[in-house]
Image (cartoon, rainbow, N blue to C red; front, top):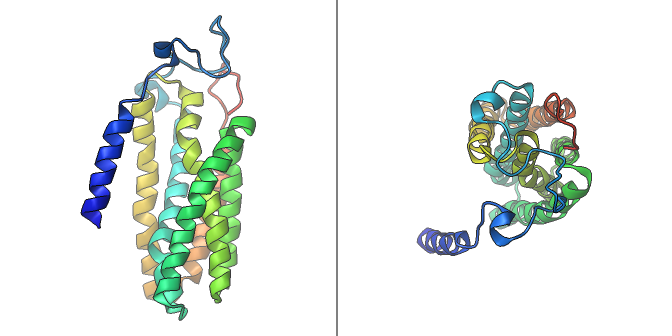
Length: 243
């Protein structure tokens, strides 16, 4: 199965990559929201911050913290929700379906909340996502029935789709496109760091307490920290546009 999946990904990525263009001007077009005169409300085109300047801004480290919180909560769920469900006596097949539900709703969240972000801004979508994730974790603490875990999966899966879709455009709005790939790669270390620490910490808490309840409370608290960090995010000095 893994060989088949890997082969399909390799083929699809290589083919789709041939359709990518760095800039709309390569196709005789302009970016959405820009007029023919080139007026634009944010960093665009080849303008923007190089990495060495971006890392010196407060906004860079606020986003790094936001990404850490997102990775922490996401991977705790993906790693531990199935063992948690089976520990509650839920059949393994149903536990796996809970995880699949999270994945399916994440796709829906990416599409729907990604579209919403185009209307209200990526920062607000991050806040909405963290609020829903926090509420889902608080719901999960006392949950013991399979329907309660499915409801968690629906809310959490949908919620995490918004921040997942908004990471790249949020960075582009803040720091422009000239070093966008490099800046995205470095800030994504926040996601991977949270993803490494979260599941380990949750597993340790379970080993010590014999329950995931404290771990989920920690995840809810981390989500609240994400809300606070996102609320503190503002454009760099001298730049005026909606995030």
